[in-house]
Length: 122
Length: 146
Image 1 (tube, rainbow over the protein chains, first blue to last red):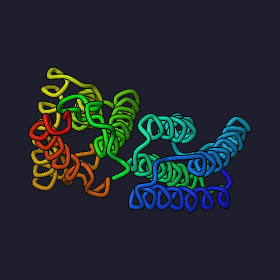
Image 2 (cartoon, helix red, strand yellow):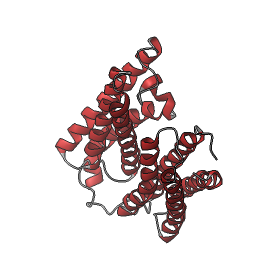
Image 3 (cartoon, rainbow over the protein chains, first blue to last red):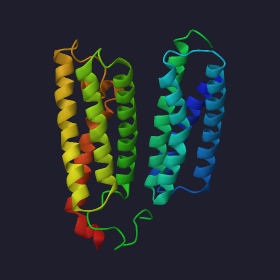
Image 4 (cartoon, rainbow over the protein chains, first blue to last red):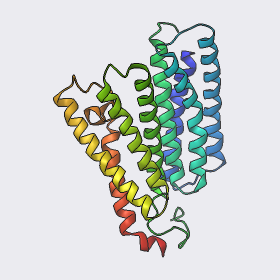
């Protein structure tokens, strides 16, 4: 787990959630901007998952390894599914759906941080 | 309103459209997290708190059924959604009250402990929103369809 990247991710998911909520308030259906924003956060999530998984297999042990790996898997799956669901019915509510997915992913990243932090490693 | 689908497209009483999709997204997140949490609990430390972990699994199933009921269209799906959301409301109220009355028997081990305080009170708010949405789509179904 790379702490600076995780903190950037928490911030990114909050920003993505706000972006989604603002589009809902403005009655703006999900479009290319939403795809790009979600894709950018997803790219960082994939990077984090790869780095963290590499460190786990390299011998570092977070508090609950199986839980940690499940959270890593979930962290990269939620946004693509959420974006798909948001764009399936292109109404103002798509943005709020993306926001829900972003908050869920942000929570997962926080859980990953606390599990990793319990090892005392950085 | 740009967000309104063309009239006639929305099936009568549909729950999986408009703001309902946001509700379904939240339900799906809880279905996933409650079920996954229960699976890990039951697999790794069932003997520590069997009741709480079984409750955890039960809540996960309820969230899954509510998600499916809300996401699908038709009378059976609507009945499923009503049933699941009512059980969910009863569950969060009963487990919430019991967890405060007897914290030893109910550690912070289910999404419903402490009325869902560990999950930002969302488990308490969600069934209320679910019931309001089911009531609203049931009542205004013909208008949405026409």
